[in-house]
Image (cartoon, rainbow, N blue to C red; front, side):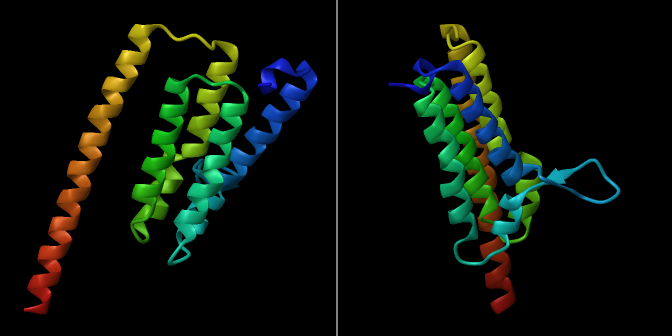
Length: 161
């Protein structure tokens, strides 16, 4: 039984809990003197050797809740994409934490879940457009990451020589 088949007050209670959780991970604290917020996710990213892995596992909990809400495959794919982008770029030391402050994968996933709950049926054209842009983003991120790694390796070799 999906969560949407349960009483409405229980469904709304679960949505509030998930929203609070995402807020804790992505936007609980404010950088003084700015409107920029951050959460526990970028802080976990500062922990060497596994902080980002822990954040990724925690973020996967929202995706699991989306499954319980009966989210469609396309919604789940977008949510998993957000978690993957957050994990990949968040793994870069220091800069990854800066990226986590900006990207806010959990808040994005909550917006996707809310959209599913209020309008569970997307048209084929909407899904195709999103999948197209996801593919473009994945290719762009992969090329950028490859370029960054290549520059880093070349700089390291030049420094060693």
